[in-house]
Every structure is written in C-alpha cells, then in structure tokens.
Length: 232
Image (tube, rainbow, N blue to C red; front, side):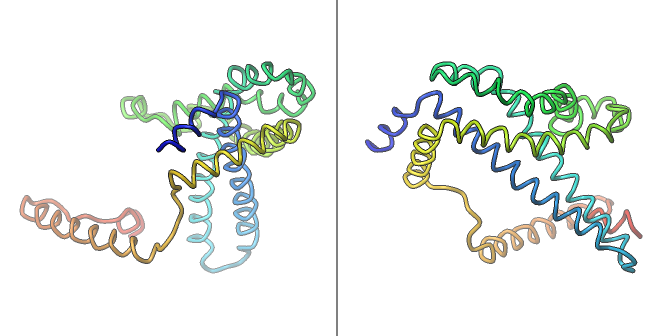
C-alpha cells in the first residue's frame, strides 16, 4: 500500500496525459491493423458461394472497428487542445505541435464530424430512441466522413508517436511507471477463456431456460437470437 501511494504521488499531469495518449495511440494502431486485415478479407471473397454471409460478417466487424476508432479520436480531441498543449508548454516543448500541424490538420478537420457521430450514432442513444435518424440523415456526407476518419486514425498514431519520440525521457518514465502500476494493481488480460467462458455460457443457458418458462407461461415467444428471425 505504501508503494502504491508513492507511485500515485509521483504521477504528474504530464505523465497522466502521456499515459492516456499512449492508450489512444495503441488502440488506434491496432484498429488500423485490424482494418487492413478486414479489407484483405473483403477483397479475397471473390466468387465464394458463402460470400453473402462472409460479407455481412466482415461488415459487422468493420462497423465495430469504426465505432472504436471514432471513440478514441474523440478522446484525442478532448485532451489535445487543453491538457496536451498545457503539459508540453510546461516542459518547453510546445513547438513540436507546430511542427506537426501538417499531420494534425487533417485530423482536426473531422473533429466536428467525430463529435456528431459520437453524440448521435456511436456513444449515445437517448435522442435516437425518441426520434430515430438514419446515418445518412445524421451525416449526408457519411461516405467521405468514413474515409477521412480512417486517414485521421492512421495520422493520429504517427502524430502521437512523434510527440513521444521527441519527449523520450518522459515517455520512458511514463511507460515504466505504468508497468509498475500494473504490477502492483493488476491488469485485465485474456487468460483461460475456456474456463470463464464455459461458466458464463452455463449461467446464460440457465437464465435463458428460466426466462423461456416465464415467457411461455405468459403467452410470449421464447428468446431468440437476431439471425433466427431476421434470416428465415
């Protein structure tokens, strides 16, 4: 507990800012890799007789990946002009942002669209549940927005990594402290899925069975997955 308290005391705003930027950078980095693989899968379908099913699956994964990119770009915008500029100014390295304006401008260009999608399509659902609008109604230029979002995602990785490489001592310290945090406090990782997934499925099946009994008793149709009634 003493070690943990000391670590938390040592973390300064610049370090917290860099830690969060590091998270955003790696999330976008891996999202870009996943998108490349999805594109390759889509191109390889060819005359596959199962093309319709495979195409729908790829598009579903593509949509989830795009949502993830939009959320992380939104986080980047939240901290860029306030916290990041502030901490870089404190260490007399604000000039790096000016040098990277050529990279930042195409990212900044879609800020309003990212906020529009986040608030109306990706992250919030209250307004949609009252007055539903299609994506085309929310953003008539959605096709170009998607293209610009992918570009912004790739540029954001380079933008953040370049900030880090030009503040390497602070970045190395941040990484070491974050690893120490993880060592002390623990980290969520995907281990032994065959164990907890089996437990989860058992609980799911039990809850489904009980709910079906209640539904039947009250004259309702039993629980069904979307594919069972969307594709008869």
